[in-house]
Length: 596
Image 1 (cartoon, rainbow, N blue to C red):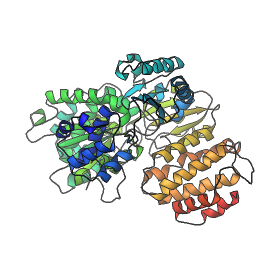
Image 2 (image 1 turned 135 degrees about the vertical axis):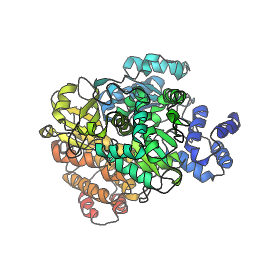
Image 3 (image 1 turned 45 degrees about the horizontal axis):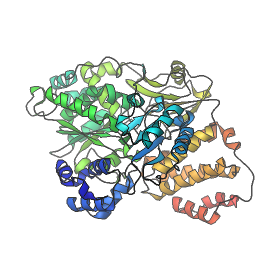
Image 4 (image 1 turned 30 degrees about the vertical axis):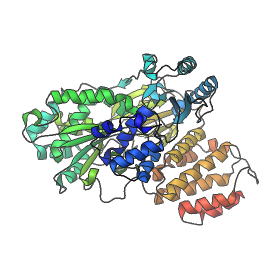
């Protein structure tokens, strides 16, 4: 497509021709042109004084960017395990049949392509699909699939499809602090100003608030380090890249409680001495961009953002939103910062940590959506009040995104220390054999462990709570997760890039019925090697669910085993070579050779 058909100069001017806004620039161009041609990328590179290789490298990193045409309609079915359990694969095949298009291939007339994406964050109201990367369709059914196909054939713009299809409900099943009655806008800021920055920080430390994004780092300590860093410029970043399959709690907070989240960011700006905040919104939540911008505009009118907030001279702070382009690894804070800077989302080598050298090489505190929400409530009610909720080591509440085999999927907020069994009872789970807590990188619990409790001292979670009854094959669950990690590896380090692919190939082999008990041992070896050799947490946690399901649901694996000396399509030399590349060691070959 001719880049001259796009008013590139105006678009670049809106972004101040800043190279660090490259991802946003490419996202907006593609929204107009549907794909990114080499001529377009070359024009952008020239205008931003970047190399074409750099711009092409960024465009090639994110799965929502396309350097080849994908059609007037790009339909992506959510491929999370819970969507599969609701029939997403059958519906994808049905749509392809009706449209006469092969999966993952653009139809010859350029009208449409149908493929998959890892997870749309709609696990409680799936199966779901994403249309042209910005419009969601929830609660898919055979009837909706056929109607969708008719609309595509009639070339009806997706924005004119039935509004009911794009309805996204909060589905709040149990509210406590963060999902309950909210402070009036500005109440938390006023309370923080009354204390003063240092006293607010001290109270935050007393609250023992820990990050709600998964790592669980002490929020007060992180803010203290950022505040102490030597710099005239600091940044506050909200990590809204909720990419862990099975997680959708931040979606609800951003939909109905954005004021409280933005207030927490503003309090962070006061405490650490930052004038600028940035929200990194995952690409799958693009539909929330306009409502969130409207909330920000309203807060500026109320004197809660901008210059001299609430009349306090020198308290200047504002927030802007960056939208991601589909990369799970950008949930890691340093990869997120790389993406904010218009680069490939490759995790940085640390130290230095973001609190010392983060966004644009300035001190930056990166916190999760739920964490900022909690900050506002602590500012209003005090740290001592917060420590009265939960346990001694895990203070406050935690929001859980519950999906899978239960009568009432949705979001539930509990004090830390709540039993796993209590959550299952409340959501209407029956005959449950397993719960995956924290998403694929978390822990898989069997029925024997439902007496355990949510908390940093017991079952650590980022919020996902996927329920599987006894009709489910836990091998299929682990297989889906293996596919996810192989697909989402950023490719930077060999142990993760090759290791996740080797795990997937081994699982594929078991799925086809060509496996042996030695395959399971090799999976254990790959897990052990990847856990200690990868560049970031993605590879280190990629086999968590695999390890748990093998240990706790071994019969699910054994039913796929078959003693064969010849495996069709199995190349021993290639397998050994890739294993050695992945691990830098030869001992894994002893296990692989048993399959020859």
